Length: 245
Image: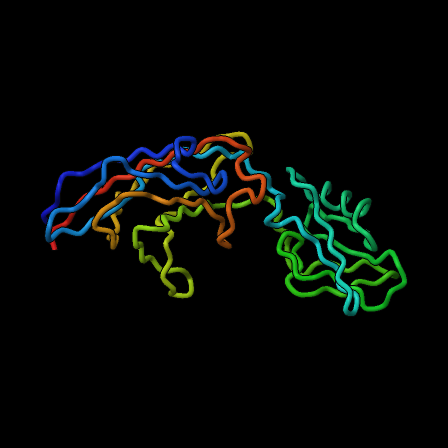
């Protein structure tokens, strides 16, 4: 394989040309990067620093919906870091019509209706372990079908939205996600990621005038929801090389 010399790009979120949110930035390149005639560009993210400043409960996962016939009752848990016991206590005190408990031994929530309405349900909710609409009653508690998932995201997916990346997702559909970064630090720590594979990927772009980056979760939602990363900065190091066709 014949390659051009590499070009390293250091992206710092606070120096972005345009900020859509804490996790979505656009960077304009004053010095345009372009490949020679007959070459294709390859791109890799070699390292990243990302603060773990996003809450485990945020606008991406904090909504609890109850169904009662054609009536929907919605309650949003205030963003923050919660344990299972704290989630159960908060919902029991603040959310209408339900009492909630949490069993640490099996990591499941249980629900009981606090009114006499027949047919009340908890709508599907991954955070609470409710995998399908769950009927709740007044006479006894009903346990969630699955274990709860309130521990926060496990990975950050890095999208580069404008350079023509053609990776595949689980459905075999083209995606502009270039890499997955494990969240291996607790809240208030900093993820220090280094690519050990040195895996370069072909891109469609022949010239790089701008780079639009978004950090998302497994569902494609911006990290941290409306609260983002609390205004803290992240960095990515990209390396571009050219390969002779």
